[in-house]
Image (tube, rainbow, N blue to C red):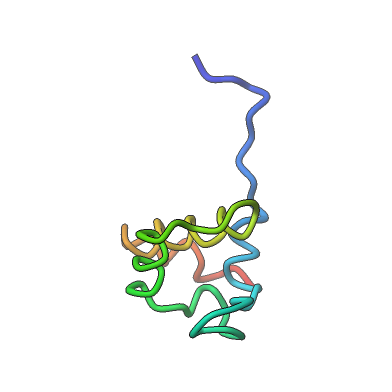
Amino acid sequence: MEDPTIKPDTSILLDIVRMPMPYGKYKGTLIKHVPTYYLEWMSTQGFPPGRLGMILSTAFIIKTHGLEYLLKDIR
């Protein structure tokens, strides 16, 4: 049975398309433009804790499952 109090955080998708990568090789690049191979490498190292980790791991899942169309019309 689903818990009706749990709701998806749609602001994660907004952050993926609007937030620049804060550090590393792709510092300053919008997270949606960070290459899949880099996100894959980050997943093996462990995403950072907190909201940034959630944003990066969600971007990784979207890219590796061919769901980029979800981000197409978000600005």
